Image (tube, rainbow, N blue to C red; front, side, top):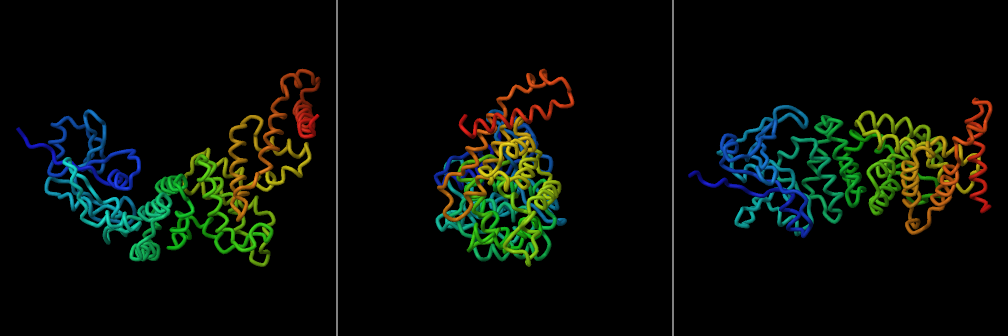
Length: 409
């Protein structure tokens, strides 16, 4: 009879156990085995680049211990070696952070060759070794972990490595799909502002998110932020979105709503006239470059264009309010319009002292939308002899209904 497989739970599940956090998924490394042995044991192969298998009963992932060697720039430029002679310590050495480079044996023994426990106790994000610089995705992953664990600081030597990766151009090899994947995951963490702060401090935003990078150092209008710039305002906005548990489209719209302010010329500061239309073009360019999903892109474009009008809802006449609803396709897509208003609420609350204030446009526009959607468009159309006048008549009825609703009649 062959010996039992030498299996270790590794990575994030060990980290989260030690932090007392719920474990979502468990990953395993198998040492001393071969693909043939795994197949003979009933495991199902799923890995394309290196041997990864699904457990025949639990369907959890089991990877053969492996090493990797840099062969070309970028995320995909690696050659992998998975064989029976690869040790657990060698496998852990290729991982990004010390807190992710721990393992636990079947008998409960913790294996921690690179000081992960120490850094968990010290609340430090530290790279395992110099190979960290070989994978540009690790810049984004580290920033994402900073957003997940906002009370952790970056080790000084790790910050130096991040700056080196920007200086040498390694981050320029990030592919759009991985950039969006890590950015979107970072936006869904506890404090997304930390992701932006880490990327900005090492210079990475200028290379991978230049539209956002340009916002730092651009002053807000004095009435909004006498002591802060647009970039700092943005940090408050995305953190408010996270604190409310909003969806990814809302958080991305909150992130990109002010991109047009980065186009304002210094001689016009601190005003930003016409930044909404400029912002639309920048949002569209950013989304095209990163291949952002349509729901996130469409909401972000609407927020960039309409957030100023939504903020002024209390000042709008009923006819103007109905035009706003129609331009946002709110009658047909009320759920998306609700998300648009939430993104605008994040902009409002992302100001010092505004966190507990009520965002009045939300109630006003919800009431207006309910009144406008209450119109029986089919009945209006049937009562309009000239079909060319139907759209105008429906609009008029919506205006009448919104006027009555907002006046209390």
